[in-house]
Image (cartoon, rainbow, N blue to C red; front, side):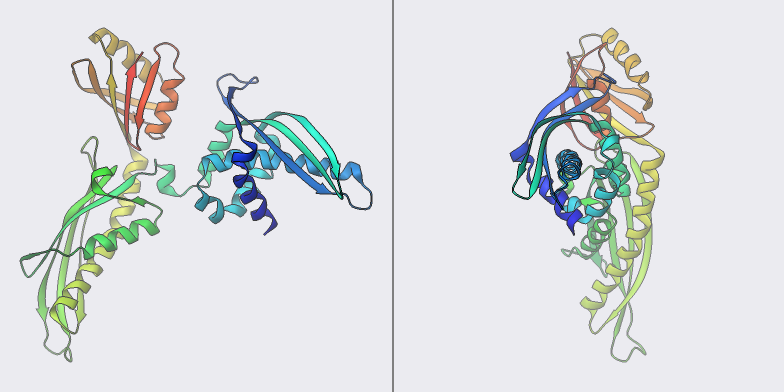
Amino acid sequence: MQRLSRILMAAAFIAAAGCAGGQKSRLNPAYDTEVVEAEGMSPIVDGDKEGAKKTALQEAMKSALGLVVGVYVSQDAMVSKSILIDENITSQTEGYIEKYEVLKERVDGEFYKTRIRAHVRKEDLAAKLRTLESEPQKLGNPVIGFDIAEAADSKPQQTNYAELELKNRFTEAGFITGEKDKADIVVKGEAQTSFNTREGLGGFVSYRAGVSLAAVKTGSRETLASAQESAGGMDLNDPAAARTSIINAAKKAADTLKDRILKSLREKSIVRLNLANVATMNDLSDFTKILRNIPAVRASWVRGYSGGTAVLDVAMHKGSASDLSQLLMKNTKRPVKINRTSSYDLDAELQ
């Protein structure tokens, strides 16, 4: 409970202590540091002021890490993973704080208080945080939308039983679900159910449903995975039995489809890059060479080029559009301005 309180307090103090801004690491200029101010305190037990001083310094460094963690991790994640974050990150200050300076230290009543300014290696911290993420988060944290048509006894229905069940199943697996028009991946398909029998069921009715689904990336229109499942359902009347059969089939399809989506994303992560301000084909050729020399990029190819805008598909060894944007911004040979980033799409322009 004390560990949880420390982390939540650190997150709450972001506005008060503040991040002084990012700087280049002095030990390795390729990395960035976040400069933050934080305070730690420790009770003075049996007059041991030196012991309290050391503990207060350690608490200040933990609070400094907590501030940066609070920037990179949502409040929900802070609460749900508080023990992991504390044990794996804030307890290992030396690995993430490049340097620090003591701004103020004092005895306040029965406590020793220390305030520091710390340079936190955010790349190392972000890498560690990724190891605590769910599988969908590690693979770009895509937003999943759904577009499922339903029919019962060959008649189109305005119901959305399959969609709701799919959303629940994907959410439980750690995916973010949202509106299909704003999603990174849309699960499209149909759910159809038909009367089966009522004979020998003691007053119950049986329906049989089939669900056919395909997961499509909105940017490239690439089909990542597909699934087809069927299941039966029984209830006291036709509409209820039809609903039950669709839900049962959707439940089976969801389990199959989410695993196949994750497998596909692990095997091939492709980012659609929309690059503006490309004056000539020579500019595009030079940029493509730079892109292919990035170690995280497995391959790239141009899908189209007209009106000064090029559309490229970039296959990543690992990472998402956000990771690619960070790599492009570090490129000094041909500066790139990033205008918009989603999980698998990136809008940028040459400078």
